[in-house]
Image 1 (cartoon, rainbow, N blue to C red):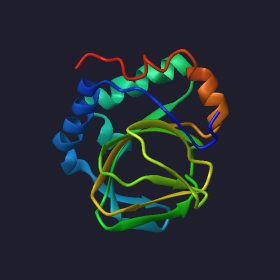
Image 2: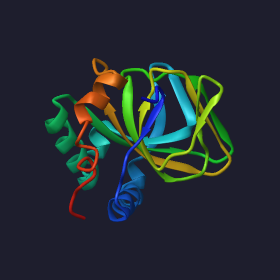
Image 3: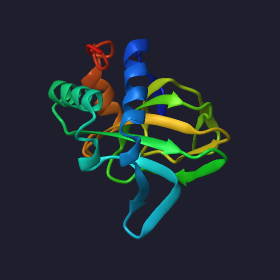
Image 4: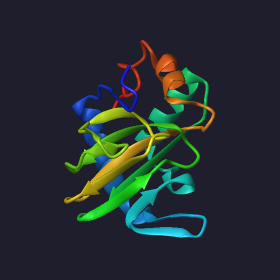
Length: 167
C-alpha cells in the first residue's frame, strides 16, 4: 500500500459534470479561511454553499452510506503561480481529490511527488502544491476519525462505484 496516495477511477462524463458544476456555482466561491487565517489564493465552495451542487452531493451522500461516515464535498480553486505551503489538513486525515484542471503535482513530505486525476490522499502527512497554472479540484473530506488505511479498507471492492453516477 502506498502511504501517501491511491489512484481511483473516474469516468470522463462524471469528471466533465463535476467541472461544469463548479463553473455553474463559481459565484458562491469564497476565499478559504480557518480561524484567523485567510488564504487569498484559494477559492472554495463548501458547507451551505455546496448544497445546490447536485453531483457533489449525490457522490458524497452515496459514499457516506457505503462507508458509514460523514463525507463533506467541496470545490477548491488555487490561483496560478501560487504555493500551497507544506501543511497537514485540519479536521480530516483522508480525502478524495479529483483534479479537474491544472498540472501541478502534490508533494508529500518534501520529496514524494505525485500526479493524479482522481485519488485518495493521506492528508495527515505533510503535503504541498506549487502551481504554475490555475488548479481546480473537487474534494470529498472524511471525518477526522477515519484514517487513510482504514478508509482504504472501507472502500476495498467499491473503487469502481464511488463515482458511478448518472449524469
